[in-house]
Length: 373
Ligand SMILES: *Cc1c(COP(=O)(O)O)cnc(C)c1O
Image (cartoon, rainbow, N blue to C red):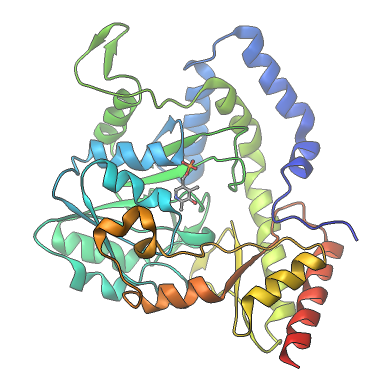
């Protein structure tokens, strides 16, 4: 049996090869590798897609989070409330600007920041809340924004996994002050290298980040503040521009895969399938189930049967060695720790075929039943 991978970037390239090849050839032919029309065209198209006034293309999702904090003036001594159940890139920029990440446990149903727990973590030093729209489902932004407004806090959305996700009719960037996207190759909209962006309705904030990404330039060799080299390059912009028109259909395909899994797996004992909040449309960057049995055994058996599975994420951030100086302990965030022990990510990508979905479901059902015996 051929392997079913977690993601299949080759299948996607094969489906749009002429468009991608033409985009790459166009950039090479005109040698406009940095800035120019490819970048601005993609920025305009992605802002329209997210429904925000502005998009600024950047070198990565991590750069997007970092420059957002800098542009909002979050720095030494400030506290930023976020989730411990995410990729480490959510907190690296908080540490980098000298601020303190303050973790709040997740809602065990959605795996996202639990809005009911935020209030208790707010102190006079809190400057921002950074919700993550994990696995492609948006956090409970209505409640988060309400808390933020009451305490006059910035909201920076980590939307690295949530291109096109909708909550109560609005997308990332339409809720918070700013939303940060990654176009890492495996993301729902992926470049052929590192890339990222911010989306916002705040012109001043967008202009500030556009300047910071480009060495604080006011003209070619005049700089009125210290900036950085964190631009989205033209090749990546051209590739992203060729892919963006397909994103809505790819998202629909992911949602169909997710619905298929959920329908087929929800009757099985020992497996919890993902749930969407009311009025939420997740984009299923990851299809995450939880198992009550021996997860290591389930993973080992899936591997034996040539099905790739993952864990997003196995070590909560408060227990990461890189964050040991923050003094996190086992037991601090029980919902996060429980999730980290029991979750499994199944293969999901738009080109996944019905036979492949079927095989994952059948093998998984078989594995779980065998282990329960
Ligand atoms: C991928 C990701 C990032 C970082 O994006 P890069 O483009 O790899 O820098 C940040 N946060 C989350 C939740 C991610 O999944």
